[in-house]
Image (cartoon, rainbow, N blue to C red; front, side, top):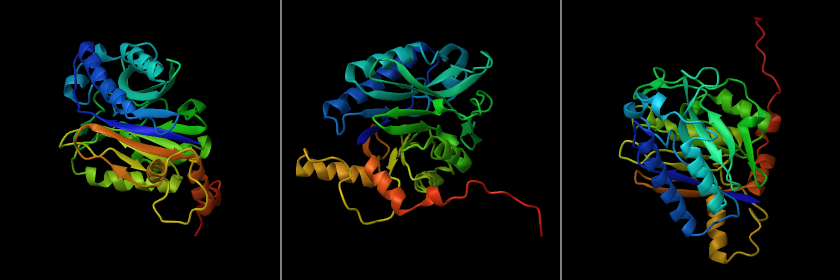
Length: 309
C-alpha cells in the first residue's frame, strides 16, 4: 500500500480581498492539474500547498483579515478545491484564514483538506503562533484549540496523516503527542518560511522530527529567492538492509519500479522556483524501519521528575 504526496511550491501573493484569494487558488489549481497530466504514481494522491496559500503570507493579507477570512467548510476556497478534488479524484490540502471557534473577532491560520467525494475531510488550525525575526503573527492571529483529538488525523488508503503548520514543528513534544496518540505515517508540514537567520535550522529540524517519530514528512514553502526548498523526508536517514518489496510493484515496469522505490526512501527537495515535488509513502517501508529501529516501542510510557538528591 502506498500514497503519493505532492508538495506544490508557488509564489507568495498576499492579497486584500476575496477576488485575489480566488486568483491564487486558480494558479495553484493549475499546478495540480499539470502534475496530474504526467500520471499518478499511486492510486491515492494528496497535494500540499504552503501556509496561507489562498490569501498569501504578509502584511497585505494580515491587515485585511476580516475581509479575506473564510468558512473552512463552505467558503469560496473550500468550494473551489472541493470541486477540483472531485473532478480529479484526489486530496488537496490548502491554507486560508478562518475565524476562531471561540470568537468571530479572532483569526486562525488554518489548513483545509478536501477529498475525492468533493467534501472537506479535515480542518487543521495552527497551535503555535510565530513572532520571530521576519514572522510577525501574534498581532494578527490567535492559536487553535490546544487539545489533540481524533480530528487531528485523516486516513487515506490505510495511510494515517496528520498536519501541523510551520512554527508548530519547532515543538518536539507536540508532534510526539500526535505520534503516540494517533500513530501517523505521514506528517504534512505547510509553511511560509522566509530565509532569515532561522532558515538554516529548518531542514535539520524536519529531518530530526521524521527520524525520531519514524514518519514521512512533506514540508512545503513558497517559491522565491527568499523562500523555497519544499522538501520530502523519509522516516529513516540510515542505509539499512531491505528484504522484500517496498510496495506491490509486480505490475510495474523496471524503470517505474526504480523511481517508486527511490521516491519512498530518499530525501529530495526543490530549489526556489515554482513547481511540484512528489514522494511515495510506503507502509511496508515504515513497518520495516519501525521493526529495525524500535524507538517508539522502547520509549518509556512516562518520564517523571522526582525532586530527590
